[in-house]
Amino acid sequence: ELLDGPLAFLLREPAAIDLDIKTAYVQRHTQCPQHAPGFTAFLELGESPYVVRRQQAWQDFYELAAPLGPLSTEELWPLLRFEGEVAQGPGVEREFFDLVAQQLQRADPRLPESPLLVPATTDQACRYVVPRGLSVGGRLECDGAAREDEVRAQLRCLGWLLGYSVLHARPLGVNLAPHVLSLTLLGLGAAPSAEDLEAADPQHHRSREALRGMAAGVEELCLNFTADHQRLDGTMREVELIPGGAAEAVGPSSLARYLEVDLDWRLRGRHMLQVAQLKRGLDDVLPSAMLNLFSAQELGLLWSGVPDLQPSAWRAHTQYGGGLSESSREVEWFWEAVEHMSKDERALLLKFTTGASRLPPGGFAALGPSPFTVSKHGGSSDASLPTAATCMNLLRLPPYRSRESLEEKL
Image 1: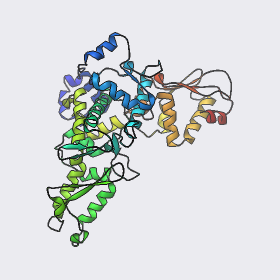
Image 2: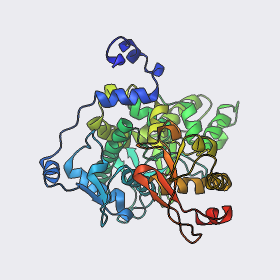
Image 3: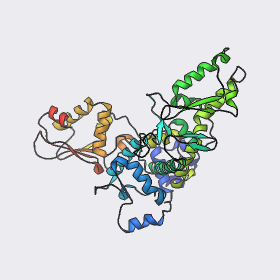
Image 4: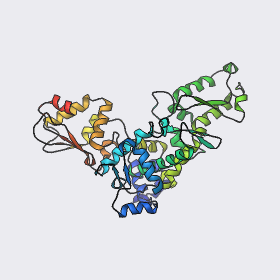
C-alpha cells in the first residue's frame, strides 16, 4: 500500500525494495489472465483441470495446459491433483513442482533423448541449465525426434510456470544460467557479459582468456570464425559465427572480433528463439513492468529456490506439537539425526515433510502456509515409521525409545 502512495518513488529504484515486498506488490497489481471456455467448464463441474501422472507430470501438465491457456494468478493447488489420488493442497503443488523440475531436465518418455532443459556446458560440475536446441538462421534446431513447434509450445508453457513461480514465490527448482536470466529480463538485445560466461562455462572462459593473452602465434591454432554446438547424442554441429566464417581464419588483427562474436553467440545468439518463447509465456502471466522490478539474481532465486538446508536455521524456525518441546528428549534426538545427515538426505527429509526438496526465497522463515512442525504421534513402538502431512509441513514422530531407533526409522 505504501508503494502505491508515499513510497511510490522506490519503484524507480527497485533494488531498494525487499524481495518479499516486491512479490506481494506484483501479486496485488497483476490481473488474472483470461482462460479458454474449457477451463471455466472444469471449474463449474467441480473438477480439477490438471490431473497428472507422477511419472509424466510435466508432459501431462503441458498437454492439459496448452489448450486451456495461461495459468491464473490465483493458487494452482486447488486445480491440481495426481491421477488416482484425491489429495489436494499446497504440499501436492510443491511435490508437483519438484517432479516437473526433475522431468524437465531428464529424458521425456515420448522424446527419450531430449529433455527441455540441458546443462549449460558438458562440465559435470555445471550447476546451470539452458533451454534445449539451437537457434540458427531464424529457426530452432531440435535434437532427436522433437518437432520445432512442439518445443516452442513447451517452452511457452514453461514460461507460464515461471510466471506463477514469481507471483507466489514458489520455487520451481530450475537453475537457469545467468545469461538466460539476463536475456529474459533485459531482452534479446542485452549485451553479453564475460562474467556470465565464466559462471556458465568456466572452461571455455579460461580458454578465451588464454587466447586473449597471446601476443603471437594465433595463426598456428588454425582457428576460424565458427563454433561447435554439441547435440545431446554427443555429435557436433559446426555453426558459422559470421557469414562465411568457416573460410575466414583468425589472426592477430581479427582476434578481438572473433572473441566478441564468439561471446555473443554463446550467451545470446544460440538461445534467442528459446528465450523468446520463455518470455512469451512469462508475458502471458506477468506484465513486463512487473517483471522488471526484479533483478536477474532475484529471478534466479525465485525460480531455483534455496538448496542449502542448514540445521541451525531449520531448528530456529521449527514448532512442536503433541506434547513435544524444544527440550524434549525426542527433539534432541531428531536434531542430532538431522546433523548427521548428508545434504541429499536433508533434502529428502524436507521433501517427505513439505513436498519440496528446496526452500522458497527467505528460507525456513518463508515456508508456508505453516511453519515446519514436529509432533509426537502414536503409541510407543520402535517398529513404526514417521509420517507426514505435507500441506501443513508436519512431521509426526512415534515416541521412539532410543536415538538409534529414531535415526534408523527416519
